[in-house]
Image (cartoon, rainbow, N blue to C red; front, top):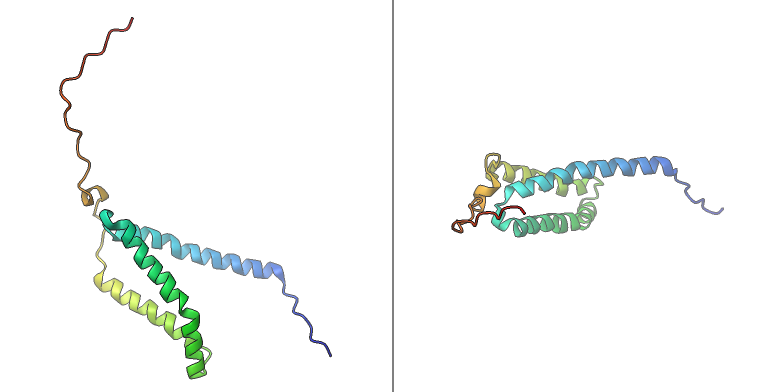
Length: 130
């Protein structure tokens, strides 16, 4: 007897992928706003790039390897969830203890504010229209 090939229903799968895209946008929108507000304007680009790429690259990149290792070590299918849950809990604790509120900090105060242009001396009177 020959094995049959699965015939997935495309429309429900497309709906599920769309729902996942909505969830991802719900996460990444606030992350961008948070990171911009969290770091001072003078070091913002460097400070944004490093934690973002460490978070996504290291913690996210090693997730399949660590989850597979936990599954292999324990034999429990749900053991792989320990790693993302532990990272999320550590993030909540560290964030709650060390992140300061930046609601009242104005961006121009961080970089020295807008200074008025130095006075260039008296201006010439406009010429009369001819």
